[in-house]
Structures are given as structure tokens and as C-alpha cells.
Image (cartoon, rainbow, N blue to C red):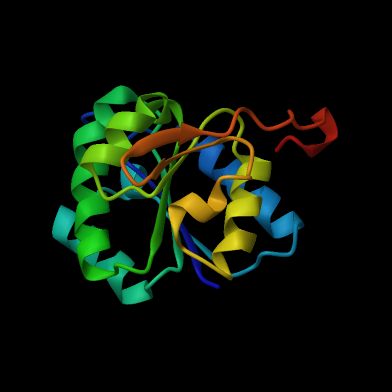
Length: 169
């Protein structure tokens, strides 16, 4: 099971501020025994869009996590999720971060399969484990902390239990 976490460009020029959300997800997955994770820092490295898509497609992740921490990331998230879904239709695309507050829009109009609402560590771990058996969004409906489409119906699963402070990255 290959996992890739990517960031989206969030400012006109990159900064050296660390992508804490993505790093926290990766750290939690690794502490839980998930080791085949690649972090692709698009926000920091700013590859050309076509190069970013080519890199993702070349790696062929089973689960692609997109960290979209600001609402201005919508256009990029839409464009990259659609490009990846076209090239890799079996890849499960998951969005987390503040943009996931617009989950219904993301799920209806982009290539995104699942949105993580609230804290993402436990939810993403559950997604990765379930993705070993299925990539059908409606079959993730018992996992707390998700939004997904069941046919044409927008669904949410409530919020996941907060992490204990000893678990926080």
C-alpha cells in the first residue's frame, strides 16, 4: 500500500514555514506501522503543475492525501485531483485541512473521494487500513471524521475522538 501526502501552494511565493498538518499525519501513520509514505511538498518546492502530476502518476499511490489548509487552494486542489483521478482512477484521493470545510463542493466538483473533517490522524489511519480492501467511498461510511458521497447524497460521519496530547506531533 503506497501512500503519498502532498501540499498545495498556499501563498504566491513559498515560505520556510513547516507543513505541520502533513507532517503530523505522516508521523501518526508511521507510528502506527504504515511505512510506505512519500511526502511531496508542492507548496515548498513549487514544481510546474505538469511535473507535479507526472511525479504523482509515476509513483502511483494507492492513497493520495492532499493537505489544503486554506480556501485559496481550491483551484489547485480541483485541478490536481482531477488530473490524478483521470490518470489513476483507482487511487483514493483524500483532502484534509481547512478546505475540507467545503467538503460537499470538493466531493461534487473535483476528483476528491473523501474529505477529512476535524482532526485527521486517526481518521487517515482508518482510511489507509480500509483502502487495503476497498476504494469505494461509501464503504468508508463507518469511519468517524469523514465526508463522502453515497451516490448523489452528501454524507458525513461526525467527528473523530480527539487525540490525547501525548499523541500530538
